[in-house]
Image 1 (cartoon, rainbow, N blue to C red):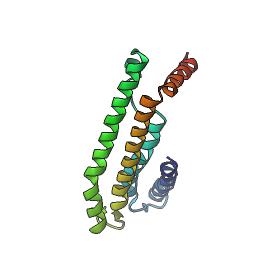
Image 2: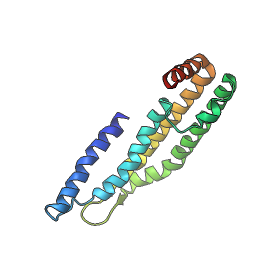
Image 3: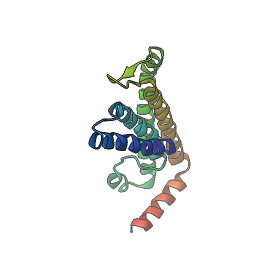
Image 4: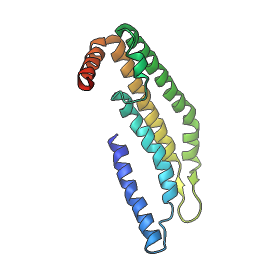
Length: 161
């Protein structure tokens, strides 16, 4: 998450330089579009692991909270396992294209600045791996340490109630 936040902060300087360059000097910063386009993907995949671990990923709590605690744990664990499988599939499916992108030195963009694609592809693999691992950790915690989940639900109820 820290890497993603830092990169998002750095992007603001690229974007501001492009805006000022276009508006004041009539000279844009070339390649900002390609850098931002690739960076958004990197930021999303780097933030996914944190969102999973902090239980911030999208889930239908209004449904799950109506079930008894044992069913809630099983349903959450099943969802976490499906999430781990989803991100593992992204990693497995993206491996060949990441290697190809690196070996062939694939670039995106035309003109003055061409941005290499392989960093984005490898960050997808890295972020997907972290997301999958975090989903597996969350499934383990919900199945084998249910008291932590129950205490979080109680704490959240006190906070919102």
